[in-house]
Image (cartoon, each protein chain N blue to C red):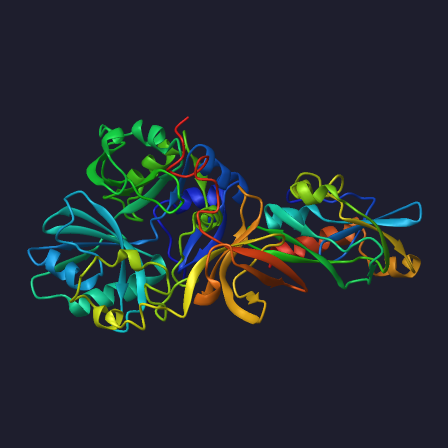
Length: 136
Length: 369
């Protein structure tokens, strides 16, 4: 769906801090949302956790930076990082161009995603969250 | 309540707005990086109408300004625009500014928006009888046209042969039929111009809007985001971040503005002190190996803290983190290796001489293509 120009795919889960999560064959792929990328304006630098690092749900696992600002990335899921999007080192702009595709950040092997995902938002709830943020 | 410039309607329609120095201003129109690259590769325009513009007039104008700034004024040729500083009695920098000499008895003084009121008070409190200081900020607009194609862009709107206007020279003429003052100056490191459109108030902004919209046909509108990244890449200080009233010209690495042998200006006694002339900390450039330095980050040498980042960003041209920093004199030599703590990681960096880009390829000195 689309809320005020921000794309929100229906098949993902979201955090209130504007990360998305997608479960695929035992791992969870993580990125930042179209809203987060557009708000930063132009992502010029991404600091992701390293492979094998452990991450915790809603704890900072890295940063996304624009020319002007630094934004923390909060992990939507607890577990171990299995893969990092190495393309972002030389092409951080992929986060803007394709936040749900080529601009993904990391893949995590989750420890307890079945229960953790209950605290994430579905597309509809995330859209409502964006609307309330925009109203402020 | 935020102030607005004569071009606010355009900004509100086309840009992401931000607050700066009490004004509502454009932060970016498309993207800071795109606008930055437009200026380095072609031409960009900036609304800088928020900056203070003061006309200093009358027979006492030259002598008054002479007593105020560390740069010689009376010996400047007509039509010269020059960069200088306003200092307090301790030699601290109240503001950095451009003075344009329009006649022996008429100058235009262009100052930072955030300091305009302070500067006006400083000047007014020292003004002799018969000196006239007019605030042109609300009655005029100011547009910067910057980049290797800035001349082509502006030339379409004026009869003045811009190829004959040298760097740091100015001339009064018309632009799109509007009475204007053009100077070949800027804050990006590129060739370019700053155009004051004389007759433009917020109630009657039409003249300024016409100039802006015509320029926008050949130059990319740019916001304050790109203005900041461009000036940082060129190594220009921002008053309030890199320099302030507690920084003197030696600490600011701006001692070159002090004309040789000049005395009798505000702050001159403090600056004559040999101790002051050997500053303990100095403003220098810094390039990080990895990561982006930000305002307030500490700079360390082998034996601990040697300074701090006063402004930092990511350079879209070099694709590295760059900064201006206040650093102890012992660690300020170009090539000195330091480290900066970027959140939890310690990143290596090198004290470097701005501009941070290759001057063969970018900036006003570049090889003409």
